[in-house]
Amino acid sequence: MSSKKSVVREQKDHGHGDVLELERTVVVEPPPLYKVWLLNDDYTPMDFVVTVLTEFFYKNLEQAEQIMLKVHHEGKAVCGEYPRDVAETKVVRVARYARAHGHPLQCVMEGV
Image (cartoon, rainbow, N blue to C red; front, side, top):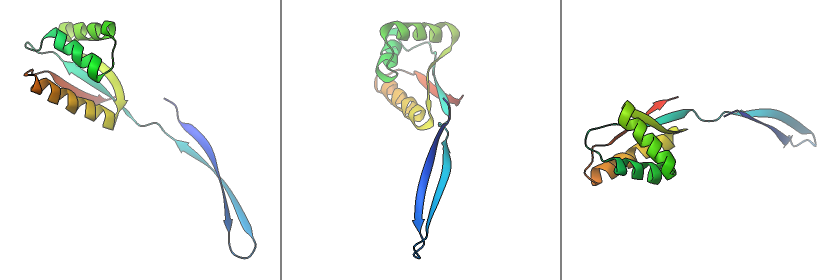
């Protein structure tokens, strides 16, 4: 992501008929991103991992299966990169969903 620049123009009336016109450039930086990872375990079924990837990370079936296989063979895989609050929410929601279905699937985040 790149930063965005915008010009802000203001007019201030100081009460004496004099109007001061100000112009300043505002630079808005994008928020830092965090990688969200799924971690392999020996108990969570592969089809459940695919469901998590399609439901929580909006992956299509082919993408979900590729990520699931990477988790299975390499021990972990990135599901996506998100701003901190979105990444935290995904980690919590995946953990709750997995526990509610009796699976130990772990989801973690780390700064990019």
